[in-house]
Picture 1 (tube, rainbow, N blue to C red):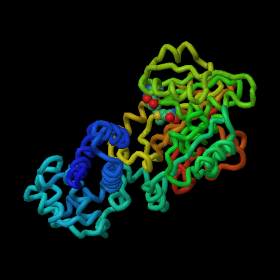
Picture 2 (cartoon, rainbow, N blue to C red; picture 1 turned 120 degrees about the vertical axis):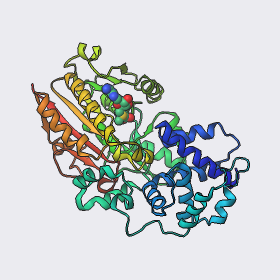
Picture 3 (cartoon, protein in one colour; picture 1 turned 180 degrees about the vertical axis):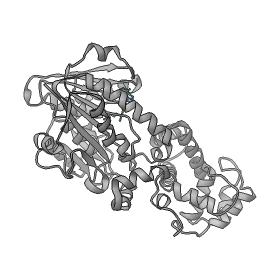
Picture 4 (cartoon, rainbow, N blue to C red; picture 1 turned 90 degrees about the horizontal axis):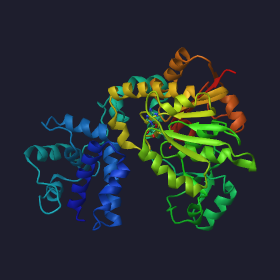
Length: 440
Ligand SMILES: C[S@@+](CC[C@H](N)C(=O)[O-])C[C@H]1O[C@@H](n2cnc3c(N)ncnc32)[C@H](O)[C@@H]1O
């Protein structure tokens, strides 16, 4: 691809990411699948520019406004601003890249030229930028984020803007952590045990994992350490009946399946539910590869589900890993940061109520409901647990310290009645977890 064609690819991709409300990585994959002429170097350069554009969206929009040029923030103006400010591309160079010739972006109009001239050489940061611009978060989330982090806000947001490590969860159905580490090191892939999860390994540098023997034999799955800890905190043991109520494509289902079958004891039952048949279908090959054949998949409906009604009080453990704003996973999903609006948060908290109601009805006496999000916002976390305790009788909160000691072992890395993980405090994605026990 020519340099101009790479710029045009970024503009197109940013437009698609905004329009399709899909993961940036999925959109980029699909884009390059249909453009075989693009090489690995093109793909790397284009993805890097797209991710940097998403990473600095608030500052780019602030600079576009600041110039006073009557232009909206669009994928095109944002790329122009990014190249002028972050890549220090001069107005002349920009005019050559925006040449209007084959595969290149259309030529710059007068206002765009003015924008390029006004922004060239500006520093990325400016003293007049408000916190939300400087730290790159949606302004409407400011009060919530300040309430949670207080003086740690800057530290936490900086950690959330770094690249996340790649963690693996060892499939203990098939191998030990030491065995998988030795196999990967044998294939020149450096991994170290994760600091908190006893079943995790952390990649020490970017490596291709798909071709390794350990991957082909289903000995590990890529899964953030925080996610592994949530699955461990469910306290699933051999012989139990377990429901993974928002199972998605099965990340935590697989981890719980391994715990269910440990030690050659009774196998137990695990039912993975989700409203999305598409996600449940994506789980099937992962279950097969992992040898988790005790898992049954069940598509449910958002309200008054007949399967839920027919299976009241059936489970020793129910995990409700609810859909949320994903604020804790901003390191991985930069696009999600800018996608949500206050209305969406309202809609999500209502969905979370519905799910908690259905999931709670599945819990057997003395059983546990584990509520988890990858959100940092109190509205989706502590406030939801308050709502639950006010609305649904018969449950008490178990101390995460006690459950951690009995499941993960030792003491949790953070204090509090609930588990709150974050990149700055625990080096994991941001997660929240509450464990609720049903009375006997
Ligand atoms: C955070 S994701 C789950 C991720 C998954 N547990 C994992 O570890 O990979 C939330 C899931 O909830 C599902 N969901 C949304 N509304 C639901 C509902 N009313 N009942 C059950 N699942 C729902 C979504 O389809 C999505 O797959």
